[in-house]
Image (cartoon, rainbow, N blue to C red):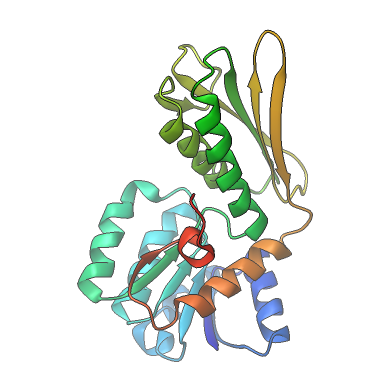
Length: 240
């Protein structure tokens, strides 16, 4: 598989390393120093692009890939307020986009567990729910895309909750997401349900960033030859 990597930070470097070890070929790397190389001509050398950049750059990068007819796997978070716009471009270009807030297989199983637990807790209003997420200090967006996905999963299942907030909740209908930035932590997410009599917690902790990179590569292989907007639930067949 011939791959273009857009964004060559920590994740981009790990993806490139694992891709080459798996026998894939990196034909284009786009970073801050060579943004002018993100052209249709250069992208045409690739079969698929993998995009891990910054929130302010993601939509432009995705657009360039779609206009060039290259399917794109995006792992950048913090831009979903423009998702409908991007979906429209996918349709217009008859292209393919794979987006996930987290490409770890384990995290996506965790998403499904989170939804199932929330469905059960919908019948037990004595439990209050809160989320905590811990990431490395270089992570720009807070809360993380993964934490927001978890919160949205709860909101879809628990009728008494209306929205999530990044500050301590001031109303019963809010879910508090507590964001911590600490050292080189790859990523930890915990959901806690507390009542006057007991607490229930589920937790996922990443041991390294390789799990995210492997998932992104698997998504790239899965996406080639498809048309539309997809996510991990499509690839894994999960109800998330």
